[in-house]
Length: 148
Image (cartoon, rainbow, N blue to C red):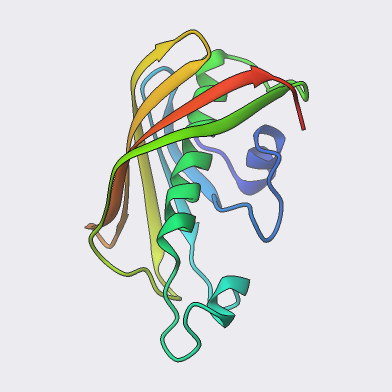
């Protein structure tokens, strides 16, 4: 299953400049997702990170991966998320940064569900550029009532 940015906005509460998933290329509910973030020179964080050599902050790569896991989690639950459900990043383990992400790159976001127990989801996530690993982490997320 694919999703464009308008469909993504139905599932994630994030908006510019914090919506970090532009398109879902593949999504298999209960299993995995493959999405993209087109990294533009116009991103507001590049003004300060770093002006002479713009690099996407690692924490924003992790956030993009977390947003992709949110899409996978919501689609795996089989419904459009209710506004009273808040999907939150709860833990980041085994984070590794292997390559810098720069303006003009297309960041490919991939995640697989490792397990789900109650409201907690655990994902194996990785981000790559042109087939080269840029970052990887194990992400733990929770879907709980409390809404945005």
